[in-house]
Length: 160
Length: 160
Length: 160
Length: 160
Image 1: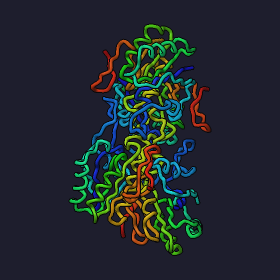
Image 2 (image 1 turned 180 degrees about the vertical axis):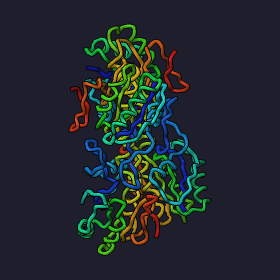
Image 3 (image 1 turned 180 degrees about the horizontal axis):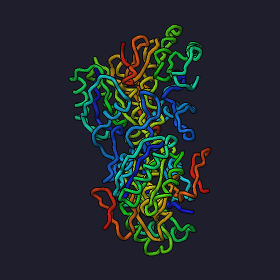
Image 4 (image 1 turned 60 degrees about the horizontal axis):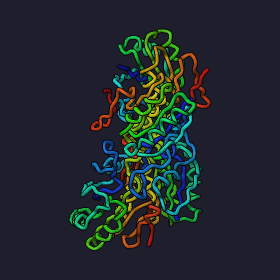
């Protein structure tokens, strides 16, 4: 059994046609799992729905707490890419015996051209087979939390 | 380094607007990797482009031979779902020290509603971390070749 | 008030994932109208759901009869492209005081890359403003029924 | 012969993955015409690429001037919806012998769920057959410039 914790990020941004701006509504994760015909036994839980640039220490604390308390030992966290590494670091302090994989997208799922579905398939797969630890799965790759950085110019994650 | 061997299947079916029928053209795998912004070091090679119901023993022999001879130790094979288990069985006879993950799709990638991108992200991830063996990755799950069957009524893969 | 008569054709072909073949289910026209945010006052009615190569004289008679009997004076008929001109000719014999616009698609709407939405927007627009007559609207153009042919090699409609 | 004048608006907004914001790049109109398999003889010209809330009187003057000077007598102007009616009014002052149809979208074309392709098919069709005048084509309908308003709460255009 696996748990998906939704925190927002580009992944879940949507277009508000009245305001003409990007905004957050309900998460797209269940729709994405249907599209991917996922048969992975899992529960989806929305913790927050925010841009990761707006994420506070208290928000991070909630994510860590939920990962610690939930009964699943395999967890995927959807997260904005800008501070994904920072949240991974916070998780690494407290979570020792679970496999937590953070993932996200560079393009909102609601856009036809999103990388979100690929990343979700990838993160769910890594979460099922990797040993306990905190990881970031982006671009088909998976990095331990302390060996990755976001290259903000190129918009990709890379080893460090 | 990883190798993707393309053999056709629903994954790569396309709509031929002149004949009004489904057909095969060039593989969509490179386009899917771009969409997923994959940064996995890999080579894509098209072995054949056929419906898996039309796959002969000689075709299977070519797939096995290519898996044996290529230098990569992690291989993803895109394949029609109808005889995917049969090809997995043929691979299991000869391939001992490589991780080979077969994957496919229930809906062609060229259709907007395809599960292909999710499955490709999943298969590439499993192939990077699983020990040597022959596997089928579908619906977000990964099965050893000898413990899976396709449920043709439901259109899903399940343990047996 | 406008009436949309659905007869099938490529427009409405869908992918049957169990059989791996193209087939017909319910029409996509209502979904397309929602996507286009259409506010045109209209009724959608499915007359048949067939490939136009399979259309018989009796089927054509049903289409002509329905166009004659319905109360609307502006009608859009969705139709397979292969025999669209033939049905237009049958309509021209009997329908004198209504504007009937036949349209279709070269790629099924269910494929992401379909021309269907463009053609539907076009056909609905021509039907609202053209004088009584039988027309074919494809590729953004509109032809009187007796001055058009399908170029089967190129997959386009052109003047003759 | 028809001319498409591009001015920006929601129609052409795209997602900038580095900044995480909506922005403008090159117009999507040529790609949309390819997707719709348009065979309408036309030229596409980008006049500006802005949000219509940022459009100044000088910008409007440029649009009017270009409509007056170009040799085509049928013109489609792609435009943000917020001030589309205002630009139509400016055009009505000076353009007397041409058919000018303004259109746009509530959802960017780059989003899978856009109404843009439907609206473009519709606007091109109205522009080919309506008599000289200034019109707004949205939601499958076409309004003379002085009998339409945008209902900002509902995000639709309606008669007034």
